[in-house]
Each structure stands twice: as structure tokens, then as C-alpha cells.
Image (cartoon, rainbow, N blue to C red; front, side):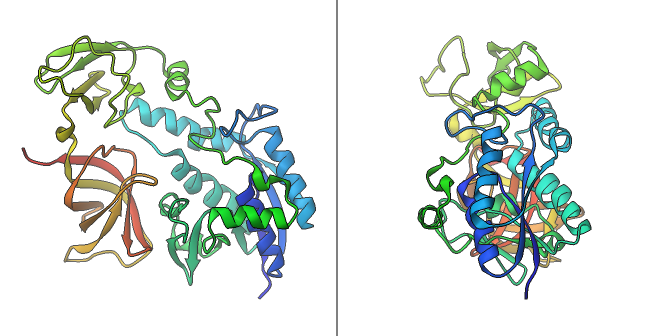
Length: 359
């Protein structure tokens, strides 16, 4: 069956090979590069950043080699509102967001997909490393590059119009294929960290937008140990860069346990105080039938490329409660809890509360 396919081309190797595979499969493919920055730089900094003029040119050259039409769509205003400003406001509220999740939810499989369908396309093709089989989202065969976690926010309706041609291929194989196809991006470094913070300085990025607001760093008893310039600069589980005035009495490292934007307080303590045994998550999205009366035995991933835990998941009204078989550490509100059965994605929800294990 021949489909009209819109291939999202970032300028990287994955999206180029995905577009080439879709065209080779006989689909009518059009390439599109999303201009997500209002003031794109000419060149990226090493492997950091994206949305540069260089990336747009790389995407156009790849489309020329593949032999497909190519366009650039300006979505900078939508990206700034739904991803960048959301990122800043989440940190200001004491949460730790994942902008890749938000980009998939609000840009690639909302704004982009909606426009594609309105223009008569049947599907959006991307270079994500994940498998989509009969509407079922599964992990990539390359577990080191698996991106099913950041796609788990997509609904069944959105996935019905998605194509992920690389899910059965390792990254090394993708690069070799790009070289065979004559794609100049075959050896281009992957972008990493946060795409819109090209220099990797998240603290500086947030400070520029939220300003300095000094507050106390305290231990679990409330004793003041130091001062910070903005609670937004810290994340749950952070160990380095705490700038404490004196070591712990037992000489052991301290970790960030809690961030309170209301009191502008950062609480630190021993590593074992990070142990979490239950998670409350909101806004669940289900790709499989949700649990009804009994808890669902499954596995949960709490960070991109993070560890996976055996758990029991159950619905509590509009909330998802996940009880872990063994404690997890460094669980941060704002991240996603993604449920799996084997390599199949069952659903996801946004972590609201991490309940710590009893002492």
C-alpha cells in the first residue's frame, strides 16, 4: 500500500536514513525540516544543539540525494511556547522536565502531525529508534539507542499515523547504510543533552530567564548548611555542585532530596534517603488496556535510558500509582513513568509525587 508520507528531517543521520527507507519502500515521501529556533546559529557546537542553519542544509542535501521534495516549516513560536517556556516553568515549580517528551507530545506528533494530516499526508516518518508493529509501540532492537520512553506520551491515534523505520536496526548499521546511500551525514555526531541549550549550560540558561534568588540549603533536620542562587538549578539526586559550607558529620556525600519553590529551599541528605518505593503520576496515556480493579504486574522506567524496575501499577481515579518491588533512587517529579510488558509500551504518566521508603 502506497502512502503519502511526511518525513521529519532534523539534519541528522537517523532521520535521513528513515526517509530513505520510506521512499525505497515505495511511499510518496516529502521531507520537511522544522525550524525551531527564531535565531538559528550557523554551526552547532560539537555534538550539542540542533535547529541550526547547518542542520537545515544537511537535511536539504539528504533529501536531494534521496530524490524527494523538501521544505522548511517554521515552528519556532510553537516550540518556544510549548517546549522551551514549559521547560523553564517546570524548573521554576521545582520539577525536572524532559523536553524531548514534550517535543514529541506537542510538536512532532501534535503540531506537525496535525498539519501533515490537514495537507493530505497519511503518516509522519521520523528517525526515532523504536518499533511500531500493528499499532503496538516496542523498544528498539538497539537498547542503547532505544527511544520508546520519549515516545510513550503519544496516543494510539497519533501512533496510527506514525512510522519508525529504524526500530529493527542498530545505530552502527544506520551509519553504514547512510554511507552506502551516499548521505553526507553518515558520520555526523549525534546531538545530545538539551537541543535548545547548545553550550550545555542548563544552570546558566535558567538563571538568564529566572534570575538569581538566594535561598537556604538545609539538611533533613532543617539546619542551614549553605546558600544557593536559585533552587531551579538543582535536581533530585544531584551530588556535585552543592557548595556546602561543611561536610556531613559522618563524612559521607550529600544528595539533593527535595526542592521547594514555595520556600525557595533545597534539602540535602544521605544517599539512602533518596529511596522511593511508590510513585504517584498524573495524566496517564494508555497504549494498552488500563488496569481495572487489580494492580497490573509490569515494569517501569523512570528516566530516559534509566534503569527498569518490576512494579505493580493501579489506577486511583485520574492518577496512576506505581509500587516498586525494590526502591529506586533519584526519582524526580516532572519526569515520565513509562510502563512496559517485556519490550512493549503499555502507557505513561507524569511523575507528581515520589514517596520515600520507610526508614
